[in-house]
Length: 113
Length: 115
Image (cartoon, rainbow over all chains, first blue to last red; front, side, top):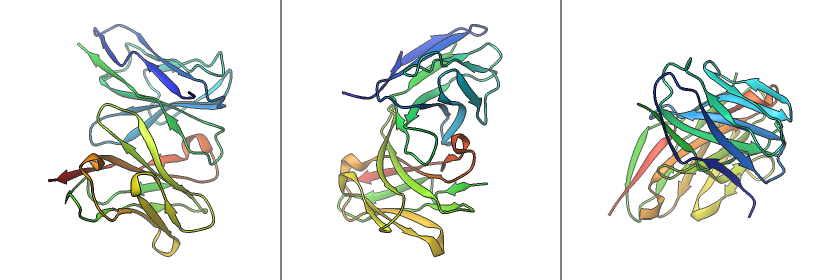
């Protein structure tokens, strides 16, 4: 089955620690995205990548970093610089950036203790 | 710049009643429009999409939406609500330009279905 996997489903971290969220897709999609979801605020774009070794900041990139070394993988690191990291994080992919629907993973809920 | 508004952050209907979730958008060029559904603690699932052609679009689970250019709307409907329809619904729009940042989501509408 083709799809997007995110791991772990739930993640806890202490303040001041960096943490990396995994996102893998086997849809052969070129473009990948990371969103943050907070209650009542919909989805906000953190980073996106249209091709391997290329990525762009979204609307709320501060305190986050990404890499795209392989087409199928787009990990997100939440750094200690992110002031309010507790949220639900969603990874998505699409065939390309241009006018294609996005397919979503199941999400990772990050809680900072 | 594109934007999406969804009237009503929370909508309640009785089981068997009509479901109507509203979506209005602003876009300077012809848009592609989408409705997604999200169940608690899950990712988003595509319900339906409008790209070109027929303005009445049918999706999964008995939902449909109509693109009305003159009203800049893309409202989601279902003739008869089922308990399993309780979820959050997001309208989204994409149009030309900086594609990566032009997939814009609305704030979402939480649908409750009462027995």
